[in-house]
Image 1: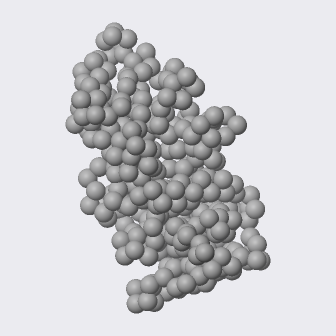
Image 2: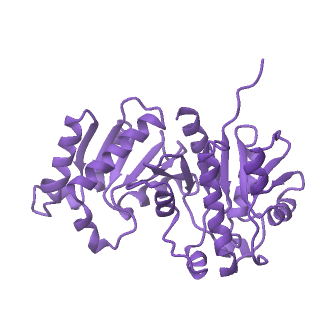
Image 3: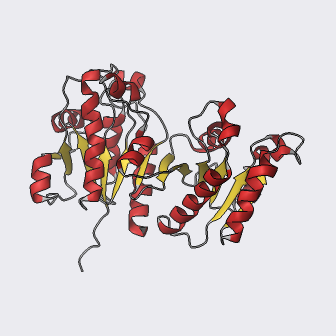
Length: 344
């Protein structure tokens, strides 16, 4: 009986001087029987790095032109395909080089094209260094914003997710109403229409990409004690509660607002598929404390599947040579992308 086809996952290897290439190669090779990984980066550099990681790793480079002409070549589990995006300068691990900034950006464009053309089912991104791309003369604020712009998506939502582990009896998902904002700007950014749209995106993607028929979403308040009936702020009264009621009227299972300092208890989390936090450092420290290195970052609202790791480029680790970087988060990111691809 023929085996079911494996989901094809495009993996951009990120900043070449960081740990991205190493964790991409190592995690993809480990998961090659679960997914078909397609690495996107400099084929010659990745082949050299793969030999240092594990001499058994076998990579097959393919040019972008060949891919466009002939599609993705057949490939068994004894080797992995690399879509070649050549670098412009020699890589010194741990040392950034702006000459490679545009090549790193090209890997994102190729990943988007690979999904839009049907060559791949989902995208996983290794960490990159924003400064390298900006120093190359291209304004760049991050993966999320770039994918949204390139896919003409007006609003996206950042969600981090962790698999169950010794600290978490069940998977934990935390989405953010606001992302990378100075704290003094957060309250002004909590607006009715934006918050409602955020809940709609979370609900739709949990249903359509995660296969949860009736997602349960818990919403945190913004202020201490969720505003304490207006004595500690009115955002809960004026914005958050009305949004929750509107979402409920639309048929969504949404509840709150809950005080954030008591929300992340098992008795609440076991009744939830996702928690919506109002700002970055309200929700993510809890998830990362329980699962750092074992979490994945998912961009909701895109017309494609994109996940990532929950950490940065770790230039200091890369400078020490291979073997120091933890591939746990990349493993989770690839597995989450594959699961979403099977559901979507």
